[in-house]
Image 1: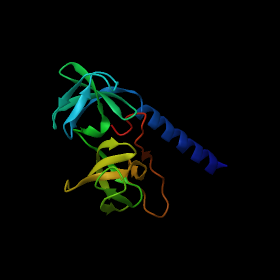
Image 2: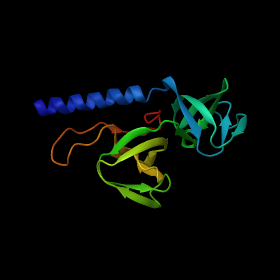
Image 3: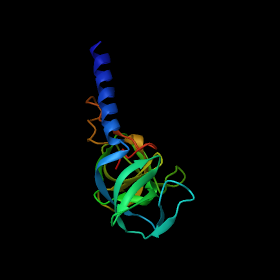
Length: 175
């Protein structure tokens, strides 16, 4: 019975963390930069006015939903696909189980593999993939979000299961 309660409590804790992290509006804005030139829309509408923003532009991410981010630049609000945004201050994360890192946000082109416990930095999200950089900053690639954790995994023999970081289409769990 205690195993059942412990598992239930762990699941509740993970759900609470993700609910807070995935809130539509961020408590504080997060400084992000464009990783490529991209269109910024005046509203979440395909026919909305757009402006072209240059690669490297720094903006404040205020909210996100369904793969889109609401950003502010010099007091002006716009909307941009999250795949074009990288955190200025990447999040430290760890690989929970050995995984493949891809060159793009699909499983089509392998970049490398990473082993359990490898420290990486989260730059951004693209669908169910997370854009990461290795600790040495010698490569950037994409990994399935479910294999990342916020804390270093315990040894293979025993230990607690760390909370997994998930990229979601509904919010900014990794921003």
